[in-house]
Image (tube, rainbow, N blue to C red; front, side, top):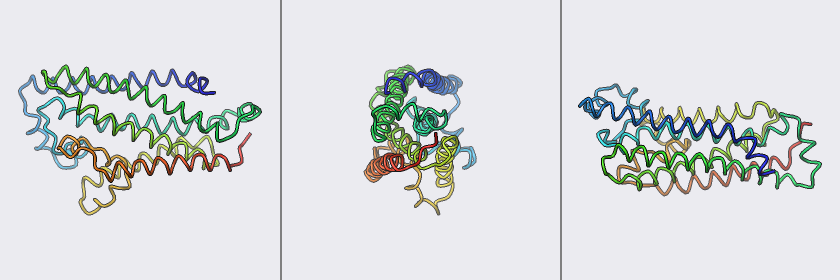
Length: 263
């Protein structure tokens, strides 16, 4: 079952990996274009309206350095990776009902708990491959523009935050698929949850009045401007990420074991 899941998602995984490499390569290519023109990125970003600064993910990052510019790019890397994760989590659990293969699966001597566990392992493997591709391409591409500066440590820190977000959104997608009575719509609902939390992270940056809501959006847990600013990981967000992973993972197992499957 595990190998069957990996095989069924291998083509889409290749496209996601290519997309990630293209995002990092094109993003850092723009950095090279700005630096060669002699234009100060810090001054350019500071002159933009606050809404545009928020949209581009600019905070206290030093845009004149390769790793600082990568910090801006990291927000979009996170978005791409979490979209992959939430859609993967939702579809990998709901596709048996959607494709009418439930009976074929459950005539085999397997429990529902084992089915969820194997599908979760396959989803984590896919996320791990995308993470490795992101990590290696980031070190190589950013290192090329860093002019001898060691960026591997900072990128490694980013990747720790990224894998936690990937796992979190995988189990969110699986929990939605396990709870939803409409298997074909589970990926849409899971993507809607991701979109709402992403938009909320923008709203928090625009208005300090709702800063307390940052605990409700995972996109505020591992921000480049915080990690590069010397703050590293905030313990509260690390703990909260693990708690949410356990919570949504438990929900996926519990509700899938109790639900009436559509055949």
